[in-house]
Image (cartoon, helix red, strand yellow):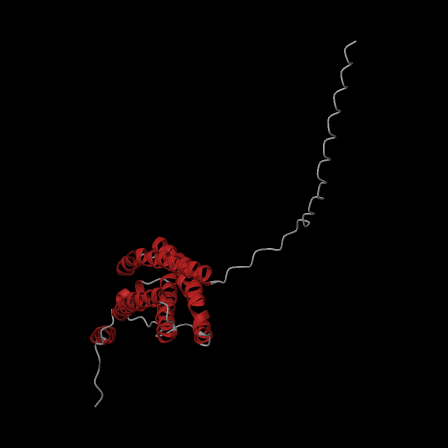
Length: 218
């Protein structure tokens, strides 16, 4: 005999809450907030994946230290965003975007000598400038309380990452200049000097005329 459900809406909400979804909170999110969450997740996962490539291949201590910090900080941020999204009943990407994956694969195909500079330029500087712009816009537009707090916590971290990346880039440039062989001196353009002609010895002085003999006395 079929069971008649007297309050189907309450039952649906109750099942959703039992599954750990906050229906009311999910309904409050705007399209812009959802778009930010997706982009932020893609960027965060791209940072972690690129850092792992560098840690497998790069040898420069400064680059490895920077990559370790990126992996650590962005893993923490990714987990925090994922936990927030789960509480809201929102799905977030579990990895980089297809374009980001393509860049990471190209990065991994480079020789170790070129990989460090490319990583610092693309992930250290370009990607963090993109992330800062994204988070700055979110700080003005996001209204959901917990999400806005997350944005405000991450912005100083991203700015610190960008400054660190610029420092590593300056170090790599200085190291490259120091290891470059010095250029040979340019050839002289002046005409060769002509030796001065030898001067003849001065003529000997003529002997003095002898005195006229005196007149004999008369």
